[in-house]
Image (cartoon, rainbow over all chains, first blue to last red; front, side, top):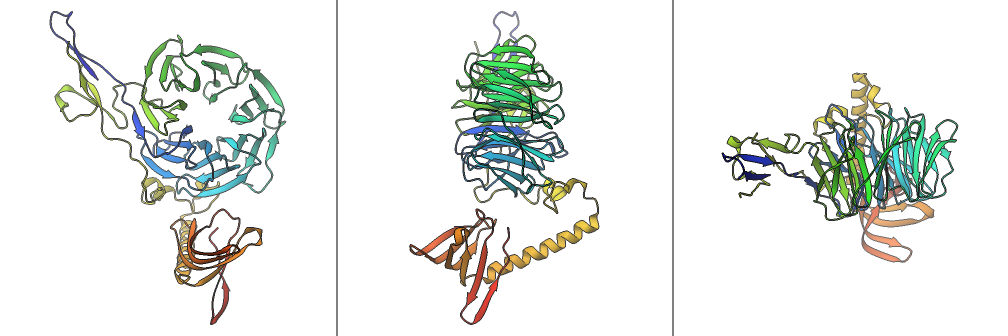
Length: 339
Length: 142
């Protein structure tokens, strides 16, 4: 918060410019490489973080409060996801397994052995199937009601898969790989429906079911595509190499973070850069809006997650708007500049 | 318009002593699953739920009493790759992820104190015996 007296006015006016005060969630001891929110449940919404320390954590989404740590992986966890109800979690790890967890008790429910590092996991809307993808270049579909059955396999990628996501009401699959392609597959035929090729590897992918939008990042670019047709909607260039981006549920803003440690906020309609925020002490690997759009979470090489307000200055979660009469010198994060 | 934003407190961090998932939390109490399956949400018969809970509690208590009874007893661990090792059983951690043992007899020598990982095997069978009683086979929590 910056409190300033405006000398150009005949009467001194006090105006407040809101400064973004991120909430830092500590606990991980290595870089945070992936994060995901659940849907909105009767108990609020939740956040899971994947970390190279091998211990993915579940947090309350609106406060960042730690709820529990999923213990069991024997290597770096590269991907993590929650089902809509936040009753199940899934993780993808360097120990060549994907695991399904009970997200209420923290118990490990299923271990799915793979032949190489697993990078990505994604539940269907009804949580009945799990999609996995990783360094063995194969997309797998597991029926969680028959976990001992062999998974359905989708082959075609020629390099490690970074991300595989259900789309179009779980009838299709989107995948991004180091072969510099993004592919759209039909779930039943396992054939590729459409393909996008890039000059460089895609660093991240986000799928927005409402409106069927696909957000892809590569180099300094954040690109938006129609998820059904893979037609490009628009591209926006950031000042630095971007590792991850997320579109606000109302599709008015998007946020992005990458190599220069900053979080950028852009206007989706005008493509204008609105704000940039420093805070992390390392590259930003992942960023996602919460399901209600009130905040976004970022994960960094510095081992922390940070929660950022979408509308800075609003009372929400652990952020509180204080009126002048209520303000006391003990309030945190206040700086005063008078000129 | 004169307002400012402050932070009420910092987000709570992990508990160094446990893995969390507080069983007293509202969500845990409301949702604590009685079966490890995808159909938990459709379980509506509270009588059946109660009965299964009682059965689970009884089994859990029996398992914990078994672990207590094994303390300081000679135990044989049957592991993967047909490896069998003997040791004196000490304790299990709260999540049954590790067993603390003493005088672990291994092919390369005796380890005075050791921690055996319980969950990285598909199945763990322990045979507990002492000199006067015949060996009994115990169930494992897996």
